[in-house]
Amino acid sequence: MALTIGTNSWISLSDAETFFSEHIGAAPWDALADDATKEKYLISAYRWVATDPMFDVPAASDSQNVKYGQCEAALFLINHYEEYQKRDAMQAAGITKFNYSEWHEYLGELTKPRSVVNYFTSAGFYSGGVAMTILKDPAILT
Image (cartoon, rainbow, N blue to C red):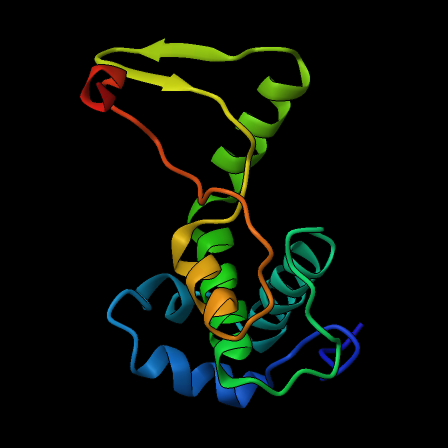
């Protein structure tokens, strides 16, 4: 399926390219093979946000912050999709914490990263929840 604004995207590929041309961390986006792959990430990001009950974004939203939030979600998926899926699978299996070398991670509810949430909050389309955080040492919280 092609990217269609109002159906499976809030942003056009052209506008996403403009966003990433001004984004300091855009190298992973730029490294994608072709426009079809970029569209897949944008569509996946749209679905990732649109199906999350914490977000209530109209399909036809033309908010600049929503468009930027979709780009940030696409970038997150490019960079972290496999890790996110692993954590989701561990939670589904009932794992609540694990250690990897010096890193300790306590698995809470998987939510969207702050870089995504902040844009949707600014646009008024985020209803709550905590953005994803990975802790090196839980003792720093006390």
